[in-house]
Image (cartoon, rainbow, N blue to C red; front, side, top):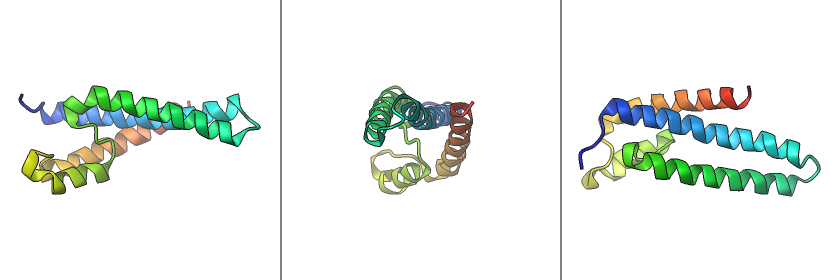
Length: 112
């Protein structure tokens, strides 16, 4: 199987990171509104939503970009996974930029 183009992988990372941040921030906002007097329940609601969201994002985007969704994960994959066909080190800066832009976009969208 051939690796998708860099632009496709970067778009997947941008959208995936935006989606993850929207799920984390949005579920925190929703949990605080649904259970205003129970912090334990808020944490549970946030954790379940985050876990399910991350599961779906990895399942969908993993085959496209590796679903790193984090610059440190991308760097670790490039450094530690090079022998097994990991992310080329030259692609790490592009991945990091896409992930940071996605995170900012996700935070903005979650707070609209």
